[in-house]
Image: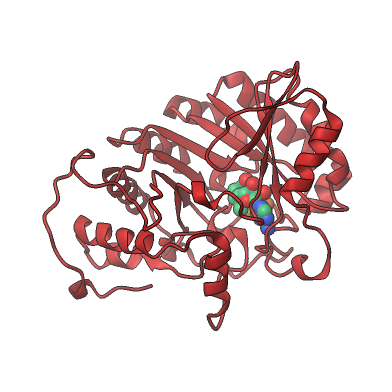
Length: 352
Ligand code: SAM
Ligand code: SF4
């Protein structure tokens, strides 16, 4: 949603993280977590995300630059955002990633910064990220078999990704998680092998429901979705000693397997049963605020910044977006499909 600067009220604001009211929606949810996409491009072509030829990538000048991202981080922090996640596209393709991490952590109010990556290039940046103070990494990996890795990502690189997961653990980040998009007939027979990774390593394996953001490749013509409740049932069937544990806000299904150092989680990303716990907002690589993954409405922050908007005007736009948030992702999707076109068809355009 683009905004005419003149329509926005100007008001005075002290740049003090304690003086601005938090971001709260009409259902009382508090938003203290921002996921910021750093780019749309990627070195992989996961079948559940992008076609082989990629998507209609936007030119670099349409994407937020470092100063714009850091300005948003600062403004969001004044509104109580404490946790930042950089994602994409593939964030390690951005040369300024470590700088963004370190500058974000130096922003008053920001307590934790995470990166979500496919992990393939991590060995080049892991030391810089550690030095920058990065809190944790989510590394996406959908199969432990080389031929399947290639089938899913359309590239080679399983061994490098596994080496880089080990490297992340060795470096001692506070949190290392593996994201597995579980799909029927692709990798659903590997649940046990993935769980085995948590036996001797302090990592969390997260099984994520497949969502319809695959650039219209697979979603319509197959029964690939495996629902969270079925994944949870499979886990209970595999392990007697499955102990429920507290995970993050959307990791309600979070477990420890008796005798394992790490943990497992199931993310109901499609069935959307945890929307009442939502605490996150998203900024796309081209600077559009999205109040829900399933929403079709963009709240333009990039053009506001490029048209010399004040911080107060950015705050107004952010509050308007939060105020308009649907009760859950189901309602958000219903609102968006009633629009003429849903413009963002791949996770890489939204920021996963
Ligand atoms: N390239 C990085 C990566 O793969 O980790 C960051 C961006 S990616 C879009 C962020 C997360 O979204 C990844 O964990 C990926 O597996 C997940 N993802 C992508 N498309 C998805 C889909 N259609 N359904 C569920 N998860 C998806
Ligand atoms: Fe790239 Fe991540 Fe999408 Fe895979 S899921 S194609 S790694 S952006």
